[in-house]
Amino acid sequence: CYVFNCSDQMNFQSMADIFRGLAQTGAWGCFDEFNRIPIEVLSVVATQVKTIQDAIVKFSKPENREPEYQSLPSGTPPSKVGYFDFMGDIISLIPTCGFWITMNPGYAGRTELPENLKALFRSCAMIRPDMKLIQENMLMAEGFQTARALSVKFNTLYELSSALLSKQPHYDWGLRSVKSVLRVAGGMKRANPDLDEG
Image (tube, rainbow, N blue to C red; front, side, top):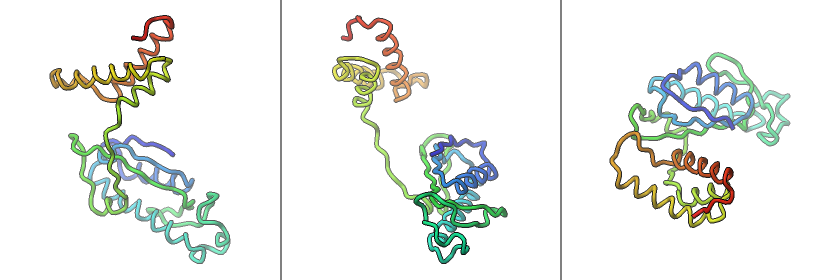
């Protein structure tokens, strides 16, 4: 699986190159923060995704393939099942390719997806991660023996700091910040293994 961090600098040609590569290799692509791409590019991307999906559906039936590809399976193991027209280029298709997108709605500079693009993806709601459990596992991975008790303390500290300190943009109480602090704590633990963990 290839992960692409989307930005407002992406254009329909760069997206076409990515989709062309995924279709020809049968690889999966995850497009993180997909709604950062400008709306005019997303309209073209909808056509690109639909073209590949239509080719996958067409070639899923062996009778729709060229004779040399009719005996091949439709995906397992990954194998080329034919050629199709993708934006004026004739390219091969390995039908195990897939596309996933993540979005952070509500942020500045984010675009609402066009309806024709929404229709090509299934939506899936995400919930806020259990920070205490993540912190406990990270502390264990860093070598702390009392990871469970420390994660409760650390989680309480972060929750109180987030709730009580002013809402300045330089305060970050999210997962990235937690990981950074716990990595530093792990480094300190490894440097002084006999230090009290409490």
